[in-house]
Amino acid sequence: MIAIAGCIGTGLFLGSGAALVNGGPVGFFLGYLIMGCLVGMMMYSLGEMTCFAPNIGGFIEMGNRYIDPAYGAMMGLNYIFQVGIGVPAELSALASLVGFWDKSSKHAAAYITAFLLFALFSNVVGVRWYGEIEFFFAVLKFGTLIGLIIFGLIADLGGVPPHREFIGGKHWRNDPWNDNFKGLGLPVNISRFLGFWSVFTKAAFSYATTEGVAVLAGEAHNPRKTMRTAIRTVFYRIVGIYMLSVLVISLNVSQHSPDLLSAVALGGHDAASSPFVVICKQTGVRVLPHIINGVVVTSAASSTSENLYACSRTMVALARQRALPRVFLKTDKLGNPIVAVGAATAIGLLAYLSLSNGSNQVFLWLSNLGALSSLINWTSICICFLRFKKALAVQGIDRRKLPLRSWCQPYMAWVCIIFFSLVVIFSSFTAFLGGFKPVDFVAGYITLPFLLVFFVSYKVLRKTKMVDLNEIDLSDGPAEALEGTRYDRYGDVQQAMFTQ
Image (cartoon, rainbow, N blue to C red; front, side, top):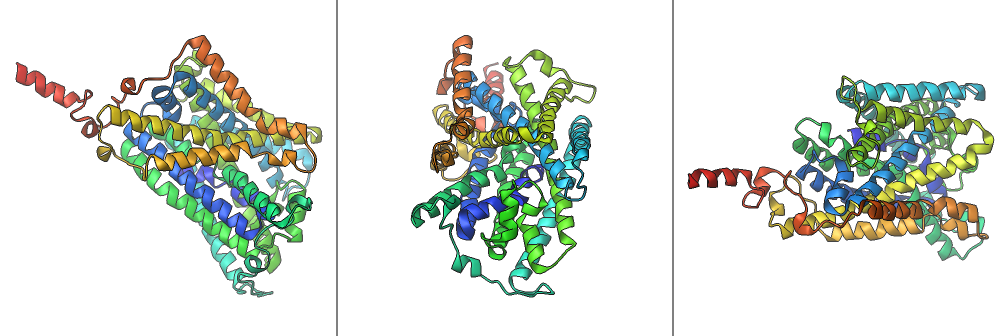
């Protein structure tokens, strides 16, 4: 449920509007469907590793163990950047969302401060209460989305008074694709493909932080059982509810809707850009936009809290690896890494940049870079899995005895690696359309050389090497899977008793 709470946020409620405009209803639906299935594949790969050794420190430690300590440190830095930038990004969105009711821009700083303090509070009350808070948000968002899906289906069938307009599949039949991407006048087939491809980036932003559930494994009760259940249900719940939501949106809202186009053109950061609000306007329901905005506010608050949590715990993992100062390991009486939480909160202060109109573009670039890091992280998780699977085979551990076994491996992991890599490489292709835009190009791709330089520097300075498959430590696995291997603790005891 924590993964659901963190994943269902502003990306679905607000970002889906721009994706619909870019891809058209069919491109919009297919883009979210394909990305959702691949994220689910990645989550199963991550789940197999997490259930095998839930207490090793999340997927950053997986990079250390299964690939190279330098690669693990790079994964940690990338994830800190991803979730760290997510804190001020969500806070900025919250200030805009509250502006749906309070039109005074002078109060934005107060709202940012209030929500930042709430996120800080939820992170210092202990992991049990943090889980309860996130569970409440998940139930609220899940229930609201189910209600909106039902409302959207009724609206599509013409059952909402006073207009009672039957829409059916009109938008899918008449305008299935975007035939004029960005108004550039490109050939129709090229425009359709570019519009469809651009949906992948928006969809990836919506699914971002799904992998954050693995960060909680070390603090969960009975982690193998808990994580096995979580991984199995996260895929069906998130992909299922996302696809139903996307289907309802694509059936009800035209890509040429004046309300949607005007909201997206203004930046798409408030409730007016939500396709669900557009549906309400089309049907003449006035009170529902306020309810939707309230739910989006709780969604953004939930995502802020989870990003802060994930950022602080990743700092702790890197401090244990000595990639960050040891001071980040300091905890309070409840066991919270108080220094790491404070550092993550300090990153949230970047949200105040959004109060200055001159800084909005820079802040938008930072937000996009942070979200794009999720694709890099998903790719790295799948690379870790390939090494993990090979190590199991080399060391004679039977995968059939693992608590959770992902499907169709290693082909599934390879498909994810190739696809996610392509989306990363071509994520900022619009920098080349309508004349080369060097600033957009640098802002879109600076993460890649930055991580590469960090990886090479760490590897040279620490003199790390890729871990040999036969030397990968798999001793934290479940006893039944390690039976008959060199890690068989029960077998060693039996042999010692027999020798005596």
